Length: 195
Image 1 (cartoon, rainbow, N blue to C red):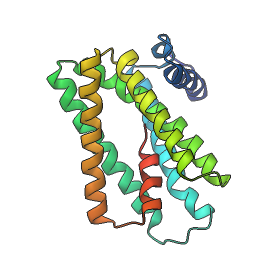
Image 2 (image 1 turned 90 degrees about the horizontal axis):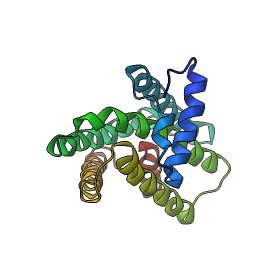
Image 3 (image 1 turned 180 degrees about the horizontal axis):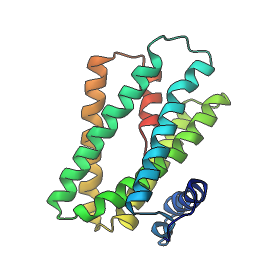
Image 4 (image 1 turned 60 degrees about the vertical axis):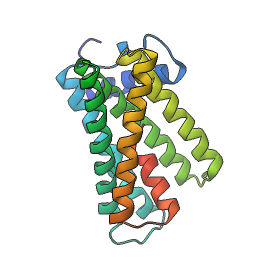
């Protein structure tokens, strides 16, 4: 992708890329900027949506005094462990060249999927059916990031996804021990941790 003139143009192109990932379009990667500037832009989007996801419950009436800090810390723990296990498997596969493209695509996917799940929550649309649909969307996007962006083989994709699942599971275990939460809050934090 050519260098984007503005962050808004980068955001619009990334939105088309995430939609391409959702439908399995082989051209999805062409919408993302895999340069250092693009990586920085994807982290700006990730941090912005993490902050929005942390303060949204306050606007919806949640009066938990430590909720914002806890939400941000939970996302940070899950992100760090998912990234760490992803890097481990990419190193084992001798595909560290795929780490930056993975990060860019995953950060943008997290941005858009968190906005959608936040909008659904703000509209009062929630419950198990919504969580199941969002979980399926996340799985499809993650498989297509591994397949179309990182260009892994089917066996490598399985290893890639298992590594991410292990990282997130360990993160949830740490969070469960550190910040005991009701199931609804833990599910909301998991949805905010991303794709």
